[in-house]
Image (cartoon, rainbow, N blue to C red; front, side, top):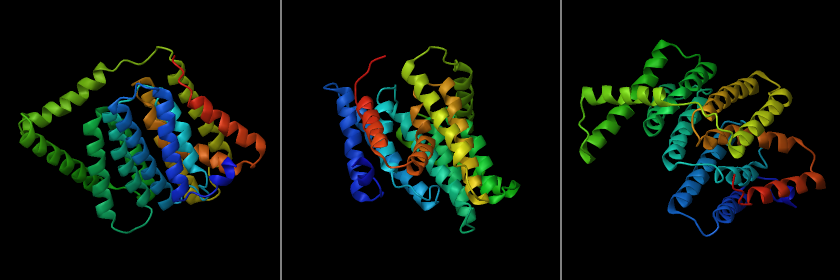
Length: 299
């Protein structure tokens, strides 16, 4: 029944997945639902819709029938871990940049796409400075899909600088922050200070590490079995792998890392699900995972 219902990703299935994710949130938080929890879940749903658009628009999955199940499964993990609305929102802007990177495979409006990559990436870094780590993914992906050269890099840089200037002008008009060269230098110093102050997390938190390990196993299985049968699919999978590795780096840096694994988790898990046989055992397994996810474990 579950498999049949989610066989095609259409509006009713998307609506049901979003409602189910909120039910998971209510089950986990019980009567202690805070406004930040509600905002975080809304933001996760918006990120899910953007992910759905990226996947379908760029044909990352030829068969993405079950992708709405991914939101339900992820919500149970996300709400069990520390989450920060600012960090979650920064991931939204990061995915906007990633969407533009994927779109470089078509030679239309390349200059605008390169500018947009830098623009959205800048917004993401402003909200969460550690996202500068994804510069590796952004530049590597741009080269994979478009053969990035120095002139193209300058176009990305111009988008980055433009967004930074808009942010500083806005802050200058709404806060006490003065827009000047010194304030820009101070902001860059702040990024460096944030990196220097980071301490690798050695504490063993069951939810934190188990989700990371599960994602590694899922991605490894995907890489060995469904990496791609032609050059175009392999390039997309290689870019996804870089994005995943970049995301995994954050496991050692921040506690609120789970949102950064959402897109790779969605793509690889659903690809595996769509390739497996639709039998009773699989339906029971999915249902069991959803029920476990919705149980308010406290570790």
